Length: 335
Image 1 (cartoon, rainbow, N blue to C red):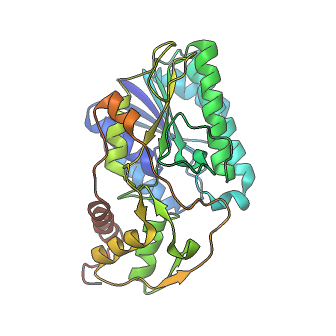
Image 2 (tube, rainbow, N blue to C red):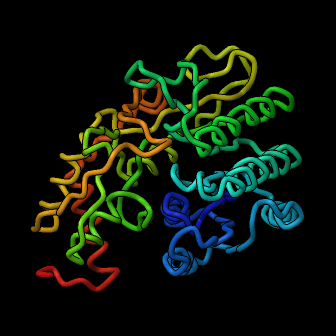
């Protein structure tokens, strides 16, 4: 198949594109390669994808409507996986405009091209952050998401609403994934696992927010990719779907993709210590604006739709990340 993937120089987009290429699909990748974090890491991901004959690389921002139009014209995709976004919770207080531009304008442009080309199935990335101040756990797709706590969450919820309206008005099949704390090899340097590993190997303390009293539903990257792969063949029907997360008036659904098991931040740090063979020095800090104390995915809908449920343990996932980190940065095993 011909598949267009946005965010291919990013963490999740890279892994999704590589899985598709390994299966023989033609992938048109798009990424703005922004300097939000290490551009060299992003270019290294793209370099790995360029090793596959079926990969076409495009580097531009999704806000460039003409460039996106041209990419769709050249690809004529049979499926679109929209993973590009301005990520990060705390960065929204430093550069709020980047979220409005990338997440709202960029997603609108993708929706417009998918509508114009009558894309058979558009899949877009959302986040567990949309659950915001919800106190009922685990988080389920049919819960209301009216109280986002960060600009990132607010723009992601807005993209879900935009997508639903497009699905309804133009009968465009759309699936939105709500990702829960994705981690693994080739991960993002702004996330805890990367920072904790780097700091500990370099003998520096790690910042632990809310004095460590937090829980996250850590989800390994391979499980995320497998879930997306299976959902790709399960677009929502035109209307009247009864499963949770599906719209009653449009070919649209939202699906949680998480491990389904919250892990305390201190247990996560212990897994890092085990993988590194050394202790982390913790600098305890208060809760940061936009953060939530706990996330926990109800993955019943994912399992009902696909027969799949993520199962990778935190220790196995952290071990895999640390092995990649040592290899990528040339850190000896005894260092």
